[in-house]
Amino acid sequence: MATLSDLNRIAIVSEATAGTTPATPAFETLRLLSESVTSTNNNVDSGELDPARGVSDTIKAGADVGGTVEAYAVYDSAYIECILAVLGQTVTWPSPGAAGATIQGNVRETFTLERTIQNSASRQSYQRYTGLSFSSVAFSFAPNDPLTMTFGVIGGSITTAEDAAVNADAEIPGATYAASAPADALPMTGSDVGLTWTAGNATLQTALANSELTAMSINIDSQNREIDEIGTDASDVVLGKLAVGITFTSLFEDNEIKDAELANTLTNNQPDLNVTLTDSAANVLTLNFPRVKFQQVTAVTPTTNTDVVYEVEAIALVDTATVLTFTAVQG
Image 1 (cartoon, rainbow, N blue to C red):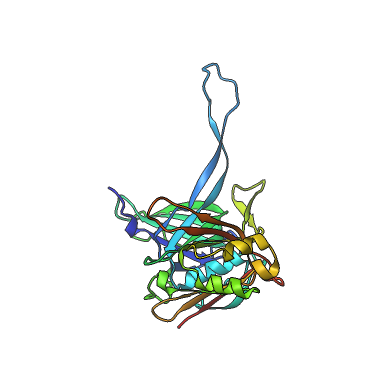
Image 2 (image 1 turned 45 degrees about the horizontal axis):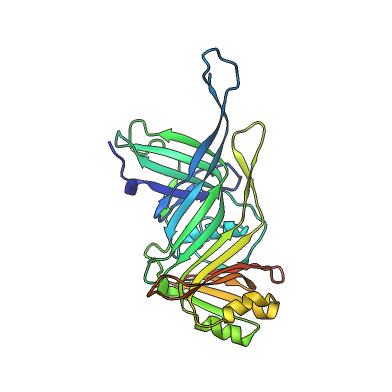
């Protein structure tokens, strides 16, 4: 019997102790487009001599957990905590569904992710990943289209369970499964994005304010690393160096943005960028990058009868200890 993906339940809960699912866990069910969290064995071919000239066995020498979780950009209590985890800030569980002005920190937070799949006996199979770290989040913006956010996860280990006689008899005792709040928040679209540039150079600020963007992506990557230890096949996780990449495509208007890249100075090439995402219920997510530096600005001449565009690559730099500020305000 085939298993329909829509019947899957993906839920997460924050861990007080890394790698340990809380007793009577209060899971929050994720709103999803797709997910690919998996455990990959580190198999090593046996090096023993064998007269049959074949590989006599393979040795499981550990496993790596990783993958992505993709969703529409929505105002969602569980995802707010995931963003805070990427930033290295303390997670609150269950989530209050809001976050004050928060900059990057040095706190390592881990989660248990549980995948529930309807099995061939019309009961349920469970795959549980403990010690999971949300290491990155990427926002993708486009006109006239729902916005998306993709989380990268790494670390931890997997266990499985199987319903034996009745539906849900292999659930964790006392587990609850709540919908993330607000449950009726609609996905944000390209028209829900507000961009405000504040540059040291008035001419550059005007050029950026007047630029017409046709695509944009923001990738916030904590670059967390897995640590393999003797005595366990679970991978521990440590925080890495936070890197923020910003790319966008805009219609070519003049040389001002290219001049900023060539100038390479604080006044002429490191504006402040404020990104606001507002949904139909007046819930607002805000990302502020106080110091954005243009790395590459390329004017692309496409084929006949198409628009000339700028393709821009930028990074967010430290500005008095702040790389970015994240705020979530429920309407």
